[in-house]
Image (cartoon, rainbow, N blue to C red; front, side, top):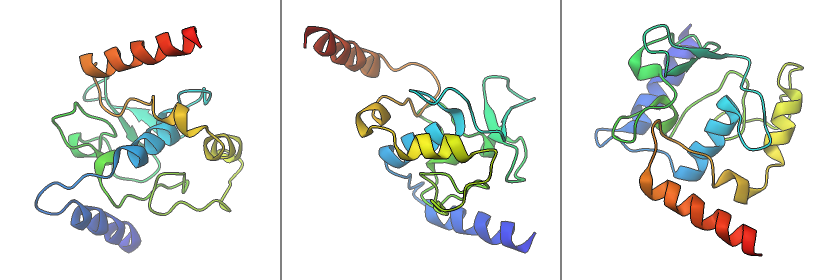
Length: 150
């Protein structure tokens, strides 16, 4: 229990008083580690749907529970759990502060290896907020047109 409190305190401290967020690439990797996407078809075994709001998800493995401040993704105006600059994962997945490439329990071994080998260009297409962004959708349309014409 003390270790969890220390990890939570480190996450809060990393946020600071100005609500500092992790960089987009790290958050995209965290989203991929939790939710899947691209060629990773399955979510993390610990991913749970909130009973408070069925459009939100939380980690069932870290012990933080189902609360608005523990929801992994929020709208772009809100601070989500995956925004913390320092954030640990119970499975030590890519994108998290405690990432360990040698820690591969059987329940995540294949997913972890697939995420470690993902093409960085695919990672750029991972959405990191809930809801659609008109600007992002236009950018994705442009990328798809370039891919079709090449």
